[in-house]
Image (cartoon, rainbow, N blue to C red; front, side, top):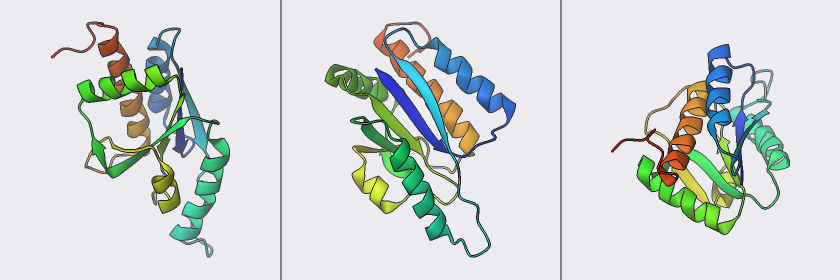
Length: 156
């Protein structure tokens, strides 16, 4: 299975890139975690938030892996515990479908993309820095895999 995280934003601090890479390399042979950075639209000069979201939407759609289950991160999405995320991941693995998880830009995501999603997922009810979201999402996905593999990383 391939898990692709599409994240609007580039030029993250080094610690973000290093932490993401650390979690990505922990996955076993059966699961690959990949990050695709999506160029954010510049604001100002007549570019409204709506126009920016529309431009980012087009870039996200173009970058989506074909036939992947689409999971969009949204503060109003479904909140899952680590154990429930592991159970969902188990079902997704059984389906044999790749996953695409989307992290929006500073102004959020288009309603069209949210409606198209197979799941709206809440990582936190709080607004978090985009770099932190990448790291936290990678960690939670790794934690879910470790739960499924009975690895001692996760403790109840």
